Image (cartoon, rainbow, N blue to C red; front, side, top):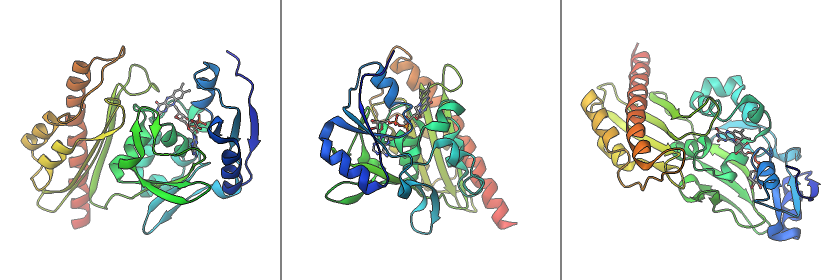
Length: 297
Ligand SMILES: Cc1cc2nc3c(=O)[nH]c(=O)nc-3n(C[C@H](O)[C@H](O)[C@H](O)COP(=O)(O)OP(=O)(O)OC[C@H]3O[C@@H](n4cnc5c(N)ncnc54)[C@H](O)[C@@H]3O)c2cc1C
């Protein structure tokens, strides 16, 4: 299907992008990699009058590791560029493994990290990653710049706390501790598909094997990614033996109204998701204990 007619502005800077978005109001949209927006336009589900292309804006390029904010990724950074960055693989391997789950390499070559966050697909990996890490997005608008924590950013399917005219200028992905173990797992029909159910786990343990921090983010199961708070509470402060891990997995979907669709029923997502969480927790716990052993050696 051909795209409807639209105006196009290639932004030179973040300020330029915000100015054009403000001038055109709600009919203008940011164009990142276009991997979600252009198909949606082709299907006539969105018909913006102007696309503001931020991909070559000079102050929206690159990423950096910061002491306070962790890995900071600017809006024009593509998924593939970060996925193939050697320093990111070394210092934040969970990020690289999460990026590698996003669609296919062709999609990741164009799609941007911040575009995926702004798009807020409930089955997408990167919103869940931001939530699991306790990260934030940096937002710029005509009146103010602000930082929005992941827990406040994702409001519903394809719905965020962004106001008209605001741009996600960057994302902050805090590092995990040196003794933390992590895991990302998802169930898809085919390689590269969106997840029917997915989980990102980050577990930290001490030298006795006791859990000092547990973070579990589920995706593909509700209108937004969700933390499995009941399971996290079961794990925290406990020795992570098989029984505790199994109990946590059994309670992973407590307090979550799981959504079913033509791809998977509520029952399927809960049952398959519980097994997925169990495997993910076991992997994260083993990785953490391995890190603790390495630190001790
Ligand atoms: C075949 C296929 C398979 C895919 N599989 C997956 C998958 O498995 N997992 C997954 O997570 N994604 C998947 N995607 C989506 C892909 O990751 C997209 O790249 C991503 O969701 C959007 O990023 P983008 O940069 O292309 O954004 P665009 O398509 O350019 O924009 C998407 C939306 O976000 C807005 N936007 C973009 N950037 C910004 C910004 N900086 N500030 C404010 N608003 C912004 C746009 O206005 C638009 O509303 C798939 C896509 C395709 C076509």
